[in-house]
Length: 124
Image 1 (tube, rainbow, N blue to C red):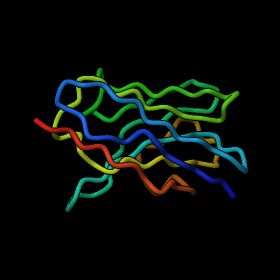
Image 2: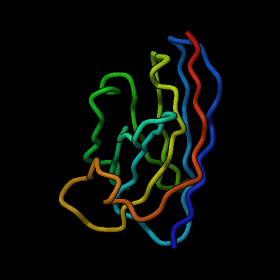
Image 3: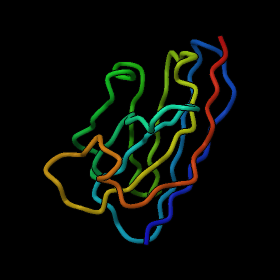
Image 4: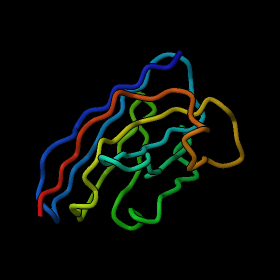
């Protein structure tokens, strides 16, 4: 079992920055990912990384603006979000992939455990 608890969601203005946190406990995972889901839309890949901090992968819509970071000592994964846009508004989910794949996956099916989500709202 893996427990994931996200935090840090907020209402911000366009252009602002925000950092989300995902505290992990329980069984060790190989990759950690962030996804988001806006109302009426499918869950979208945001970023993923190995617990060693290597092989970061980003979705096209966030490349150059978001950064995924791991803190092994704190068992926490962060999503640093800069230059936020209204289209970034969504519930953001943290996810854990237990398999030792060659690279992190951007697909939801690759992740075995999910957090409850944290709301990010970006006003224009």
